[in-house]
Length: 274
Ligand SMILES: [Mg+2]
Image (cartoon, rainbow, N blue to C red; front, side, top):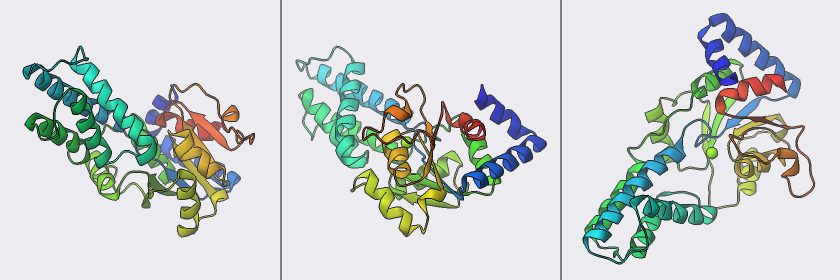
């Protein structure tokens, strides 16, 4: 596994030096001076945090509905949790995932179970969900710390670029110990379409898109908008099946500027191989 190779490389001083040097050469050949790296589900498992929270919410609401003898169409707490997650996903496409969206999802799920907004257990479920933004710290993916360190060692200007709020990002960076790994942190204004976010940020950051490498797990959010402006992309595509060259939809083929990596631990390997 390439991810293991990055871990091994990084434990060895010679390996580290070599990796930093090779990356530097590659970036210089590409003319790339800046790297914008996504955070949630690229470096850390934010989906996992939501999975645990919605599971707890499902349990609380299911128990309450049963205790009150409500006629419900859900057979288990897991089904209630799935319903809550469905609301989050549905609302996310329009409003991004922020605190109001997740709390609204709890209230809508509760109503589906015949529970009112003022019910104290619904309040408890809302409080549980709110912890996502305060106390729950996502796991750092294997190889993420080493990948970030390797990119930094290469001398590239490494910036964290995220669609989450500054406050939540600060908490997650502190909790994961990744604060201080980046030269800067950009929290995009999510009230505008993703393409506009990138288009308006490149000039603000005084960055030429053609000198930028973006790294992220969301092809349409992190990679496509930046690459269509001239950047290079490293798409962490996990098990997603669709291929980059057939995905642009408008006939443009960016496959020569987008590389894919299965996980964040594979990103360095994928860059060096390109
Ligand atoms: Mg992401």
